[in-house]
Length: 215
Image (cartoon, rainbow, N blue to C red; front, side, top):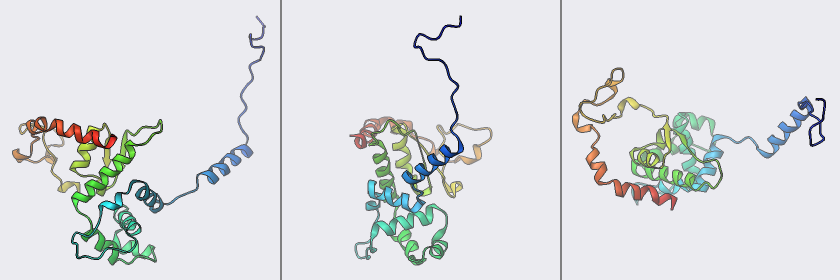
């Protein structure tokens, strides 16, 4: 009783840093982690993943926009944020309402959007840090059947915010499956039930596709 620890050091109560230390830490974080806007994050993602390469004129005769990366980033922000072309033009002096509307109509398809989403997932899989991806939050343009399927195969929870989801078809696992509270969300057409036999036949192809980005 009463003896000191073997190390010879006594136990001391930890001191909380004072307000001055907290302000110094905050200033250091502000210097090293500057505040960035959403368009800047989109631009950085476009640069590192190259998703903007998937977009382009639907017809070879249509003119290409000047500075495609910047224009596609502005268009992505315009519709992902829910502003729309008119409101975006009011807040961006260098953008007209016609430009993002025309790009959204003539430069994107469900196919190239799915490819852009696959590029984003591919870049996330190449993340070498210890913080590994488990969930991806995205907007309406960041989801599609192929992207949902690929994310599931890779063990990633794709959590999109889907606009007008009431227009989508919810597939039953079997034609006779019924739900107590959410049954009205699912299609009553028996042809829309999940075809498990088809998935079983193409399972080797699906696993090969899932292994491709990581390789």
